[in-house]
Every structure is written in C-alpha cells, then in structure tokens.
Length: 224
Image (tube, rainbow, N blue to C red; front, side):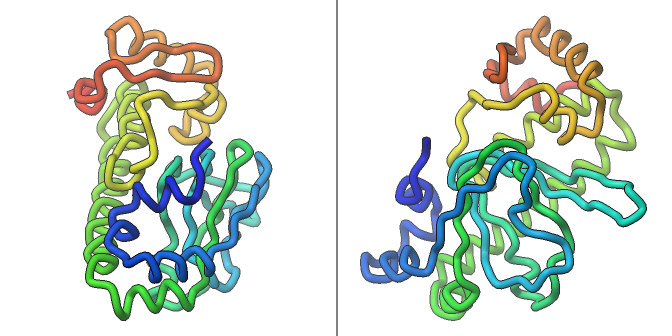
C-alpha cells in the first residue's frame, strides 16, 4: 500500500520543493479513506481541494437526475486531479466515485494556489498534466467512434499506465472485471471475452482481481 510520502516522492513537482515547502504541503493535506461506491467528490459542489489518489482506484463520472450515467476515466495510484475546476473557480462538473476502498489526499485550495503562484516546477507539471489529460480525452472519443469493443478495452487499460498521469502505478493492476466494464463502458460478460482475446494475443495475464500487463506497447496499438 502506497503512503502519502511515497506518492509525493513520485510526483515530479513535489520533488522540486525544498524540505520546508514540502512540509507545508503535507500540513495542508488531509488523508481520507473512501469506501468502495462512495463519493470522493460530487458534481456541483464548491471546489475546495486539489485531489490525489494515494492508493486505490476511482472513476470520474457524470450521473444525471434522469438516471443516465457515464464514466469518463479511471484514476489510480499517484494521480492528481481537479486542477481545472480550481483554476476556473467554478463548481465541480463531475462526480468521482471510489471503485474500491481508496485513500485520497485532499490538498487545501490555498496551498494549491500558493504553489501555482510561486513554484515554476508546479506550473510546468500542470501544463504537462493538462496536455496529457486533453490527449487522453481525445483518444477516448476517437476509440469510442472508430474501434471495435476488444480494441476499446485494450486502449482503456493501456491509458491507465500513462507514467505522467499515474506515476505510482505498476504493470500489475488490481481491478475486477466489473470495474473494467464500468471504466470502458461495456458489460462484464463482454469484458471477459475481450480479456481472453487479449490474453491469447500475449498482451496481458488475467487472474482473479488482477491484471498483469505483458506488452504495454502492443496493448496501446491493439486494433490498429
């Protein structure tokens, strides 16, 4: 289980801070355990924190009063999110829900703003983060419109191993087939079929509650 110190050590912006600055960051972070199925944050609420996944798996989603819902992406160990809403000073525009028991870092808005105003390394990180996230969302739209289900699932899994967005992740992912289905927008039964096909192609190894990626490059290109 990853600790907050390990998460910060893996965050390129935090490694550039002095010891005193890092201590102030830690003092302005509250760690909370969010149970599976519970909300990390909710659409429409005031944005008072920058958020990070210390350990666990959560999904960014939109749930409408009509009962319709959609999942945008999964956020695993080492990921930070919510900077867009903080910088635009607007209510949160999406829900974030824990797919399993997860430990979440809540950094105070004032500390985020201080880093934004005083840290070149932090600003460089945000530029890279926003650019990577934009590319991720464009890829999701492209895959939804152009790829078959097996390839969509492969790209969904591969996207969770972006070293810039998820620096704390390894090539072994603790995730159930139900969770994969929620992230990829396909049924659990169809997930099972797609995983068998990807396993036969030598791209991954599936065990109960765990996926081990064997060939990340080919997984990213599957279906081309």
